[in-house]
Image (cartoon, rainbow, N blue to C red; front, side, top):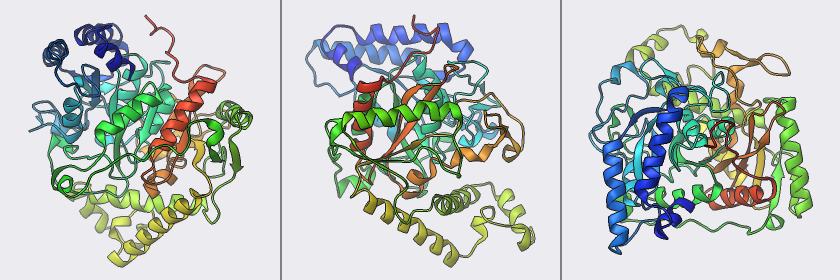
Length: 473
């Protein structure tokens, strides 16, 4: 990480970087509304200590003195952890989440937490407590969700690293909308302990089978540095096993076998997105990468999406308030149709669907013996205007191909989420109107370095993060 290296080499101090971040927050924060709270006093104290430790020659962590932030859903001791929910407005996290603890243990300086949608359940970041976060590319547009505050802050230069979470594209979509990098790790690689409303640490060891926590940054190399800090077992699990990140399968683009699909009826991409993605494939072909178009054999994307929606709705319903679940159970059976009502199905039905989920993973793992990475869109559209109308399912996204269903935003992120495989969202260009477009790079289960390194190598060919207009100062 360049910032950490500059601090270690004493080219800049942690205090200088931290003050600079707060100056930028003061300057750009009001228009973006990306932060829900800042930890100014604590951050500056940590930065001073980081500089003192460096001067004394004390052991330094990989993120020593680097100003970072986290999504508000990760508990920070003594600070709100609302998830945008009114009932948690006055909440104070009893302790740091595992993510926050690991950042601190690596020497990072926490400057605050970033905005989210209500219950982390939207591709826009707004709620009644903290208001609406805007895109740094155009304040009329959403920065994405649910890690939209983090993506907007990173793109605007308000911190060097953040941590988000992802079950429906909540890391990847904001990265795509804001032109930054985001990594959805292998399932359960990064602990989500302390990421519950109120910052509580229950239930211990719980896995949603879909949701992950992962890093966001302005470069792929920073994702890799952060993942090495965040990944691995915690609590009692750490007594039994250790995690080591497997190396990337390739060191140059010509080393990679690349599968790809740039369009599909599950969510046809707009002309603007296609115009950005197609030249990437041409670049890879010129680089010597071995290209293989099409989905994996025996993977039907519509069937995979259906299975993903079943598990997603089952989880969301199971986590809903008791009164909402009770109301659903009182509906006549014929009115509860998949994917809605997933949690009302029998356990044997759920097990059948779970067997399908694991079968999809096995098919992708077999495919990753033939290719090293799989490329696809992150979403069918670039960032769209704010739309807070309810119900969410009734919203339509205006596009060059006409109005599109809002829930089409789930289609392209589904394969990596359902299978638990890692996926990196990498900026690869901008539309004719100047909006960022990201590419999704999916890798094999447990092999997170491969898609991240691929994204880094690609950036050397086509460029990576670009500062939004007006934020270069």
